[in-house]
Length: 288
Image (cartoon, rainbow, N blue to C red; front, side, top):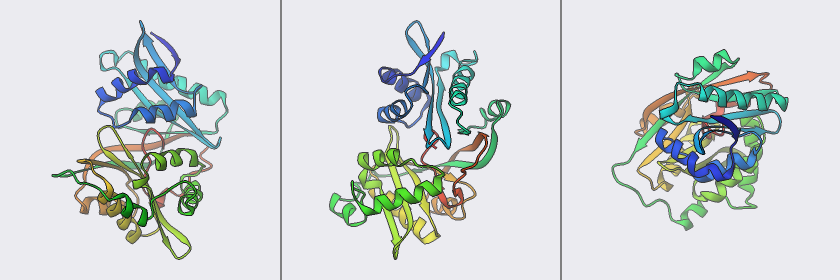
C-alpha cells in the first residue's frame, strides 16, 4: 500500500468507495474537492486499486476542512484510514493553517481526540422520505421565488452574509452549487436585510439541503418548505445543528427522522468560529 495524491482520474474509484459506504456525494463533489486542493487530497493504493481517500479544502487561510476519509471495507482495520487522516493533517500543518475542522462519527471521534481535535458542537443528520416522488417547482415559479442566477443581487448578499455565518469565504463553492442546482438556492429578505438563505445539492442518493441559515423561525420554516416543494427526490437529507433554536423542531414536525449523529471538531486555534447558532443545517461533512 502506498499513499499518493488523489487526482481527477481517481474519481471513478472514489465513487466506488463512497457508494459502498452508502454516502451521497457525486462525481462533481469529488471534482470540487480535488480541484480546490490538488496538493491536499490523498489516496491509498495497492496494485493499482484505490483503497481509500482523504480530502482537504482550505477556506481563506482561516481554517481548513478534512473530509471523505473512506476505506474499502475489505481493507479496514489495518490503519489505512489513520494514515490517510495523518497525511491530511501533515499537509495542513505544512501550510501553517491555524485551524482544521471535521465532522466526526461516534466511531471516529476517539481517534480524532487522540490526534488533538476537540468538540465544537453537535450535528445530526435528518432524513425525509416521501411516499410519492414529486415534480418540483416549475422553472418560472422558482425564478419568481428568488432563484439565484449569476449577477443576482440576492446571491451576492447571501454570499457576503455566509462569510460571517460560516467564518470564512466559501463563495466559489456556493456559486458552484447555485449553478448546478439553481432551483435550490433561495434568499429571503425582510426589508433590505437578508433574513435567511438556503442552497442544496442533488446527491447520488438524495437531495441535500444545506447550508440553511435563518435569523428567525418563520424564515427557517419558509426556506424548508420552499426546498421541499422544489425537491423531486424520494429522499431528502439535512445535517442540522442540534443546538439551533428551531431547526430540529421544524424538520421533526415536517416528518424528518433522525439518521445519525456527528460532532463538529477542530484542531488548532479556532479564531473564526462564525455564527453557527444561526445555522439550521450545514453544507455537509465533506465541505463544512
